[in-house]
Image 1 (cartoon, helix red, strand yellow):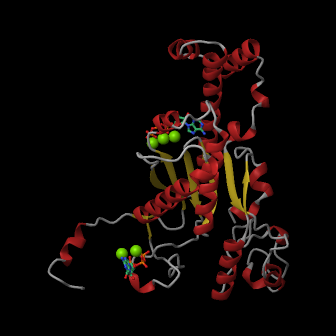
Image 2 (cartoon, protein in one colour; image 1 turned 45 degrees about the horizontal axis):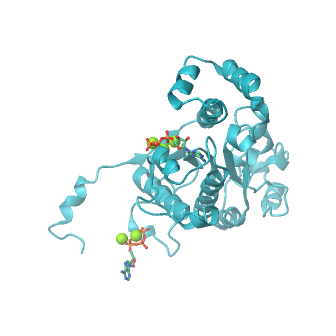
Image 3 (cartoon, rainbow, N blue to C red; image 1 turned 180 degrees about the vertical axis):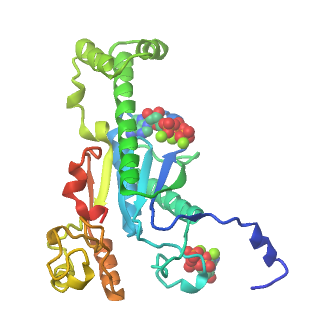
Length: 324
Ligand code: ATP
Ligand code: ATP
Ligand code: MG
Ligand code: MG
Ligand code: MG
Ligand code: MG
Ligand code: MG
């Protein structure tokens, strides 16, 4: 098959390598969901079943791709975060092993299209597969749900955190608007155009006031899942029962920590499975078997779903292992 006279067409495939050692975020978004949500009579502004379905599909994606460390979703979108150190989908087939998500050799490249399309199709498959669990009375009919996707690299931890904050602020702004809009329409009996006019030019405090004074809705008491969206991560906290091997490695670490020669590593209890010193960003060597263990541990770990603030430091400080 190789070197046939047709082989040259491969040169039309342009490179789409993602920068190494960066956080890769793949964001997917429902295609034409404004229409889709009308067709299936989603509760407005927030259909809880639909959000739970999005989360279930995202959880399945995290389970299938252990290199994902974090995901965040709201409305019809989800962002999936690959760890800086992960190397997926090496291009050349010779590294392919029976398990199709293999750790490729160092400095192998990440390919944007392959990452994105894999996430998008895995997510879409599960969304469709799980649909009947969440909407048993409404079978899916064509046109079936579909999602678009894109991959972006973020070089620093701060860039990644700012990205997450950006999506969560977007969730908040949209939700406050939608909650006010639908209150005006559903409870205020306004037609949609009038409601839109009423809200145009208003700032957050105006919308809070409209909700409170006209509809006795205290926006702060709205469900967290609506206001904050959903965060998914693996529960591989180092001190939990599921912790594997790491404490043993810490015992003879001195040489791996030039930042603290002949002394125990700093804040050792906080060391995550990625073996990075959270204070000094000092990378520890991981042997091949360690890497496999680490991978197994991540594969087995429970995926947690929370509706919490990602903008303040607290989330990250309490879960150091996610980015470590
Ligand atoms: P595009 O293909 O460009 O993404 P779109 O119609 O999907 O077009 P979005 O900006 O993605 O546009 O908007 C998603 C739409 O789906 C919004 O109208 C949002 O209110 C609706 N939606 C998404 N999830 C839910 C939900 N759980 N409950 C109710 N409505 C939802
Ligand atoms: P990758 O994720 O890199 O694509 P892969 O295992 O899917 O890995 P491919 O080169 O795409 O590797 O090979 C597809 C495999 O599926 C081959 O082994 C092929 O024989 C098998 N296969 C695909 N379609 C059929 C089919 N209709 N009947 C039997 N075997 C099939
Ligand atoms: Mg879109
Ligand atoms: Mg959409
Ligand atoms: Mg959207
Ligand atoms: Mg093939
Ligand atoms: Mg294949």
